[in-house]
Every structure is written in C-alpha cells, then in structure tokens.
Amino acid sequence: MRGTFSLRYGLFTLVLAVFTYLYALDSRFAPKNGDEYPYMHIVRMTADAGNWLPLQSEMEGLKNTKPPLIFWQAIASTGWASDWHLFQLRWPSVLYTGLTAFFLFLAVRRFSGKTQAGILAALVWLSFFATYRYGRPFLTDPPEVFWVNLPFLMMLYWGRSAYESKFLYPAIAGICIGLALLAKSFAYIVPASLALGVFYWHWRNWNIPQFLIKDFYKLVLVGALALSIFGLWFAFDPYPEAVWREFVLGENAGKFAARNTHYLADLLWGDDSIWMLLLTTVANAGLFTFVLLSTLLQCWKERRFLSSQEILLFCMVATFLMIFSLPSQRSGRYLLPVMPAFAALIALHWQRLPLWGFWIALLLQGVVLGALAWLGFNLQTSQMISDAGVWSYQPWHWMLMALSMLIVLTGLINKRQTKANALMGCFLTYCALSSSLSPLEGKLGQFSTQTVAQVEGKDVWIPCDYRAKDEEYRLLLPGAQLHGYLAKDAANVADLTQSYPLVAVHTPLGAKPSICESCQLIGQRMEMRARHTDQEIQEMLLGKVAEHLFVTESLIATPHSISLSSDMKDACR
Image (tube, rainbow, N blue to C red):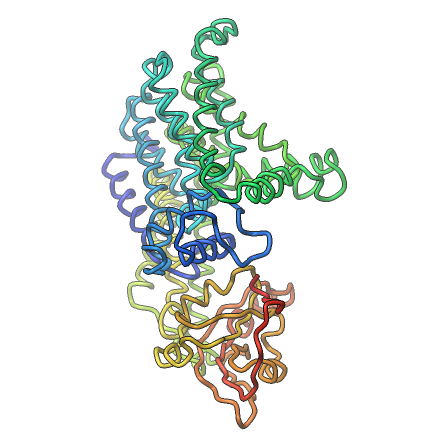
C-alpha cells in the first residue's frame, strides 16, 4: 500500500532521530532560544551561593523568572556548576524529550493496536522543528511538555482503569501536573485540569450529572495536589514575597496587560492576535507544517468516523488553545504541550494522508539543504575566510549532504517512498544544519589555550547583544571575570581600547584591529554575527556571505585602567 511505514524503516529512522538529537548537543550554535543564557546565569549564581534557594541573579528583574525545578536540575547535572559545559546543562532536556516520545509511543500503540503507529507518533513529534529547537537546549520546555502530557498519555494507555481509579490515578496526575507547575508556571493548572475534566466528561458520555458525581472530586484532588507541590517554592524560599512580586505578578499577571493598543484590538489584530497564535502553533511542526494541515483537513472530512481517542486529542488541543488565547501575550511556544497530540493524529492518519503535504516538506528540505551546501561551498572557497583561518569540513560532511539530497530527490520521484523519506529528511536536514557550522566549533571559533590562560582571573570586557550573553563567553574564556558593553559598539576599536584594560573588539573578517603602540593583541577568533540589516541580507544572498556573516574578534590588552564600582552598568545585565 502506498505510504506504508514498515517497522524496519521505522527503527532505522529512530536510530537517525536519536543521533540527530545527540549530535552537536554542546554546540553554541544549536537552534535555541535566548532564554538559555539567563537560565544559565541563575544556575551558576545559585550554585555559587551554595543553597538550593533562594534563586540568585545579578540581572535586574530576572531572578525568580521561572520556578526552581529547572534550575535545581541544572545544579545537579553540573555538580553545583563544577562541570560547566553545555552538554551537562542540556542532556536532561534531551532525556525529557526522549521520555515524552517513549510514552507517546506506548499510548498510541496501545489504543491503536499498531506498533508502527506508535513509532510513527514518536518520530513525527521528534521531527517537528519546535521539538528540536526547544527540546534540546537548557530551557523550561522539555520538562513542561513531559509532565503536562504524562497524565493524558496514561489515560489513553490505561483507558477504563485510569477513568475509574478513585485515588491512584488522580494522585499520579496531580504529582505530574505539580512538577509541570514547578518547572514552568502555576498557570498550567488551568488548561491541564480543564482538559482532564473534558476527558472525564467524555468518559461519562457527556453526562454532566454523572461527571459531577463520580469525577469532579478527582479534579479537585488533582488541582490541590498540584498546587501544593508548586507551593513548596513559597514554603522553602526564604523570600516568598519576592517570588510573589517577580513571578506571580510580574511574569504571569503581566501577560494580561495590553501590549499595543488595548486588549480586544490585540486579540484580533497584530503579532499577538489569536490568528497569529493559530499560525505559530501550526508552524511548530516546521518542515511538517503542511503535513499537519493536510491531517487536520483529513480529520475534518472523516469527523464522523473519528475514534474516541482522536476526539480526546482534539479536545486537549482545543482546551489549551482556548486558555492560552486569553493572555494578551500569545505565542505558539505556549502550545508546545499539544504538539505530541498533533503528532499522534498524523501517525493515526498516515496511510490515508495525501502526498502533497509530504511533497512540500521534501521541497522545503531540498531548499534548506541546497542553501546549506551553497553556503558551505562559498565559505570553504572564500579568500576572505582563508585570510582569517581555514574553514574546512570533514569528508563525511559532504557525504551527509549528498545522502540527504538523495533521500529528498528519491522521495519526490518515488511515490512509495515520499512519506517515509520526508520524515527521514527532517532529521537529516537538522544534522546538516549542525554540521554546516562545525568549523566554528574548532580552532577557528575558539581562543587558543594560551589566550585563555593569559586572561584567567582578569577583568575582560565583551560585547553583549542579549542579557546574560556573558554566559556564552564563560565557555570561551573560562576563569575570566567578564563584563559587558553594548554589542553595537564592538567595531569602535579606538574608543574601546581607550576605555578598558582588556577588551574584545570586532573587525571585518581577516582584518587586524588598528591598536595603539602600547596595546597588545592577545588572541583572535572568528565569530558569527547576528541581527543583520535588510541590505546585508540581500548582499549575502548575492554571494557576499563571509563579509556580513562573520567578524574577527580580537582580545586586546591596553595600558588603561578602570575602577570597578557597584553602580557601573553592565550591558549583559
């Protein structure tokens, strides 16, 4: 049958998926969110203080930005910040992501009766770009997605036993949701409890009296237990009033304030509208966005024949969508917990889905792979880069690119392979993305060991274009005392070398900074720029990639001195 996904093909793709999520896990250039740097800062400061609570931070207004579970996790994985590497910070996230995929597999296999469907659900969820982007770095999303989904996956797996359980299942669900609250926000009690209520209500054939008599107390138990676990933060933090002020009022209640004009206008128009929330939620599927759209259309056509489990999956999605449309700040990232449900629906309808969604996925993969190949060739042959260093790939990089393009082309030509190859192509594209920047992970993008040793224990000023960006530089210059200045001034070498005793400056790629006679060039490396202008982007598309994508970062010692004071503004803070 066309589109059949064999068990052997599934296991091979699973191995590829595991490799994809582990490959370049410690990369500074891994797709991520900027929140990783502030979280790293809070972990490091809290670990240095030697206590689990209160959370510590030098960033104004960013101390109790999230509940402590995510920070405790990192304190444990890094040995109280003694093993300070990205891999140590990130591997728990990958573990959470893997556990979510595993329990999704168990649930779908159980209620569908098909092992292939279970494997497909797990793989499709892992293939979503949002899962790859937020499911690997040190962020709150992986534990949040796991603990929120686990009660629903257990319900789908156990069926009658879970619904009729008077205490055991509600207690387990309450603990799971409580851990989700302690990892992300107490606000998740609302959509999670409401969605569980819909599951129970459906089990009672939409009979409200039966639901109220037999199941409502279970929701009360779940909510009370979950909030009690979240309340441990207030109970053990020596400054609960700060938690209330910064997290409850600032981080959560603040999301209901009008962001542009007023609440109703923002709801219906603009970047925070309900329509943008719908668009960004579907776009979480990344390369599989049109596969998800075709699945939703297929489900609508077959709406009279949907199984009870499929109806429940849609109920969960609708509940979370409804609740997270209420805050004035609306983002598809808030809907990450419903993406496993979408993946399950795709897997259940896999064989009946039309090919057009998969063809679009393959075309998008081809475009990305082609762009990466063009970029890699351009950088490898660039005279400007050769003046700064050697941008070279291992032979297996080009083998990966060739294999990936072959998989994509085969899927476009051979209809029997279209769906399977589109799924495999997602993981190959992510591997190619990481591999394309691999030269920067080596000597080209690192300071030498001599440079690192020379600045250890010294005050160094570095450019900051994001809060806590110095946490990235701590990976490059371990042991240095880092201070930030505005990144927009990084090219102003003359002023910087007259202001700071030890400073990192930026010059065009391959160019040496013009420094004073008494200044000393300690070390250099190549760095990738961010936040390009429209004109720079246009010129890069025309071939001037190296000129705008990279800069030379030089570390310069000057004869000037500066007295550090508590009122000095640090651009990284």
